[in-house]
Image 1 (cartoon, rainbow, N blue to C red):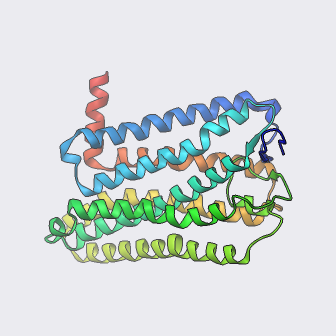
Image 2: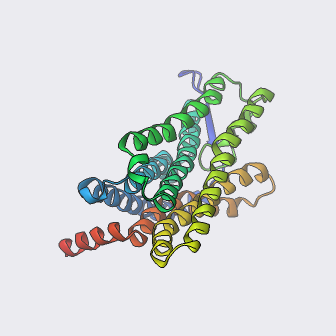
Image 3: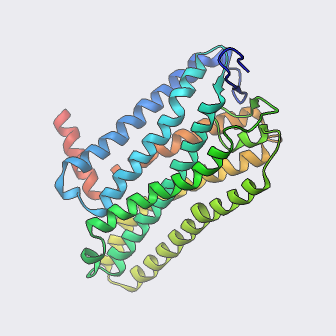
Length: 306
């Protein structure tokens, strides 16, 4: 507690031997952050610049990569500062903001993946109706839904916890997440129930929708001709790979919060660094390599740069 500024600070206690390896950590994570910025921005710019990529599928990809970029920017800059600092601390208000951004953007990513699954379903299963269904208005509404609904859900517990009293000031992590709840003197049963509702609405239901949609696509694709099967593989495989990456991120976050007292600190530290970097770094690589039109424009750009 800083009495002069009337601010509460939380210590991020998940770092391992930071005084010995601070510069190694800093160089590795700075390199990863620069690469993921370059990769994501490159694909987004290609989609914005080229008119033949102004289609719903590519617009959703651009939105997903922008979401990943914001997700990384919420964590990496503070992480880099902490690596070079003598004390790894964060103000309670800033910690709450990081929690909000982490779960808002994580939930938005799943809803964007749901929108992409729906787009692929209409394209492959109802190709004649696709132009009438996936209009500019529909795409805009799906994008607004994917970002506004999670923000409204996540802001409620954050707002209610602004004035909550802390009985512990050390967070067992390297950034702020749901572990913050374990620092409160009193845990609200109402907020716990609300959290379960949010997890169902923003986690389980979209995941079931995605699985149902891709199951329908696979069934129809195997019942159709070779061209339909080829189209399904080419356009759905990247989405499924990204979904797997996302599932690993969310599963890890849930597990680490539940088992943090029994989880080895070093293993938790290394896995956390991998998880928060792997997903935003791999998404643009997957789409750049697997999506035919994006890959074609990317190759042209690289040839022009040479």
